[in-house]
Amino acid sequence: MNRIVEREQLSEKVHRIVVETPRVAKKRKAGQFVLVRGHERGERIPLTIADADPVRGTITLIFQEVGKTTALLGTLEVGDILLDVVGPLGQPTHIEKFGTAVAVGGGIGVAEVYPIARALREAGNAVVSIIGARTKSLVILEEEMREVSDELLVATDDGSYGHHGFVTHVLQELIDEGRPIDFVIAVGPVPMMQAACEVTRPHRIRTLVSLNPIMVDGTGMCGGCRVQVGGETKFTCVDGPEFDGHLVDFDELVKRQSMYVPLEKQSYECYLEEAARKHQG
Image 1 (cartoon, rainbow, N blue to C red):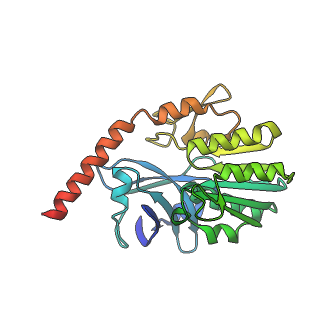
Image 2: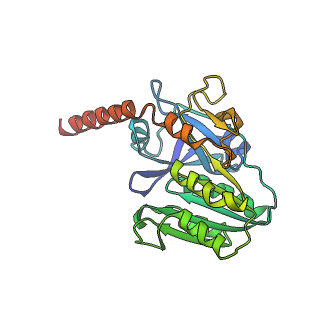
């Protein structure tokens, strides 16, 4: 149980692992996540379930190395065991036939928006997907997104591939062209999700965002993942992770996410130094 059966590096520091966990694979729905712990003294981290195969009993997790815990996950090989894979957690994405749905994924957020785009299309929506990254080599899941979309648009910040600019610029262009858009789901870095909401707000286009604040237990008990939505306190792990983006207090979210950045940086640097010493010795 929780055995890694496949492993692939998608881009620089971005990994895809397929984990054997039949119960989660059977129950998971688009938009849900799991809490993963690699070893007994490890940190719990939330990872969106990018895909699942109930017959095979596996789920697909995609993550980016941004700190010590994800760096350690990046060293695991096929056959290794994850100590904990708890889930599926969170509320599934509300899927219905909206009409034309736009799925916007930035960076690693593409992994989160992929199962949602597929579910939207299966529900009969016309799905336009916009994915992007800083540069061409960091674009992930392009072919997978193309398969679940009626139209796929790619953007890179540096113009090395597709549209030169941000995914939100492409979204704005679609609106300016007069394209009918009934629903938007935006997943990625907080500034990108906030920008997407500001693009859609004047046009009153329903826009959901998937939030990923600090999370510990995944049951709403610790309160670490609380966010302000429409002036009310919500717990991302049980009330989310998706919320109406036009109601999210992004300023507070940014402040809460930055609280432990210095400690996270220190931990990661210590890990890299220790790894370098082991490699030399």
